[in-house]
Length: 376
Image (cartoon, rainbow, N blue to C red; front, side, top):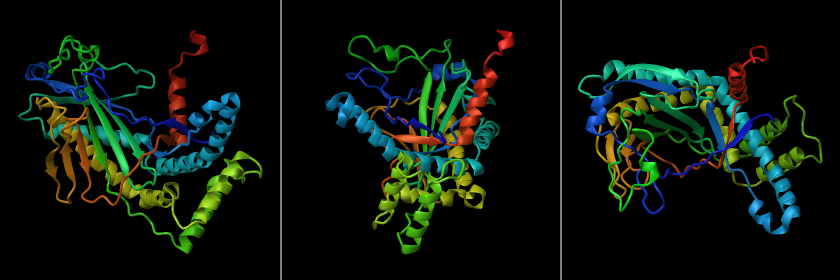
């Protein structure tokens, strides 16, 4: 299998039962912040790199009423319909990884926290004492008494937008979480344990303009479809195979007068990687600056979020980019950095593809962590 495809579950976290939802964000109180003081930052190494998202077809519900035959038919249909989008998304993620390998992404994020440690320590109760990285493929347990930084990077379905989402958490049994909310009866179990602090920070890049379909662009699209259909050895799919059927379907769609999100992604991916990924590097760097800065600010903020508040405009940058603190719902208290102009609605699909080189890296890390036969 050329590229790894995993489900991208995007859902708001509920910190309590359905009858008593509370914000996912957990602020520190003054006593907890004072007890923490200088605290190490641990950047959890990202292993996926910049993943390309796409929408995978799932017809299982439609075939459920027809028993085993229905399940087999819909599974076959889905395999054909999904094979080409998966291959194409994998190609995009491979190209992105060539100009922005995961090690560079991790180093950039850690460096921004080191800069915050050096420049913004005065006047805060909580400061960064040191910045380290950790690989959690082999050690997934939470780290005691450290602020953990866990980042996710993905391109939208049409590759017009890069989104960086980071979860920040702090866990220390000596400084336990104390729910700031009042419940009718006993608090839900989810409010009796877990991280002392938690929040999310989301950075949305500027949106690339959508290309206009022209005869020249259609020819380039057809050429790209043929190229993407080739296997690892450069061979075209054999007639009658699922890969051939998927390619044929894509070629038929290319002849119409409308670009699909997947087709748009073919061209916009090139914008991210040209000039050695200059645009991609700039947006990732901006995301890391935002995350490191606002993590320090939020750790030193003790306000308790409400489910029924309003969004707060925290900052407007010279280029018009805004930083908002969400004011309502279970994601209240989280921070979102958005560009000045948004051309259209952006979707991130339900599936994402990870570059082959990053898959190989993860395999090597797992293999290295396994005890050798001689030591067993």
